[in-house]
Length: 175
Ligand code: IMP
Ligand code: MG
Image (cartoon, rainbow, N blue to C red; front, side):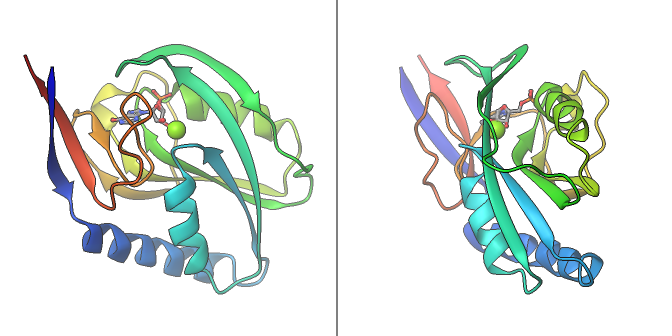
């Protein structure tokens, strides 16, 4: 089965938008600094690009959850694969996700992290696919709202491939 990738959001547009998000965070957290939580693996590129543009004090930690099999649909069951290294009590946390789809992952993360008593907790997602939402989650910082298409690149994969594409592409299959 051949796979095709069409560009949905070009590299320069992704970079520009992440810059705007960073500016907003720089302003809103100017007096506090921020503790970024990168949700592996999809958010690594988003996290790096955003973090490089932050001028406030930044600390970072990493967490890995899984809700997807090898296909393109969420199973709805979220599993903690790798926990944070450090407590988040009294920290001003922003969780960084690559994409919010059904909302199961963020719902789980929000519930899990709130119990650890952060000083504040916000959510940032590079992409939002609201058409597919089944759980109500509020995203504080959204990069782009996109239609119901399966996307790859900028950290996002199809069956673990294409994460390294510098743009956001839509994958399609012809048989
Ligand atoms: P949710 O739990 O359904 O909101 O899905 C969130 C996770 O599923 C994201 O963090 C991605 O890892 C993955 N995901 C959802 N949609 C896509 C997509 O279009 N391309 C690649 N990964 C996706
Ligand atoms: Mg993810």
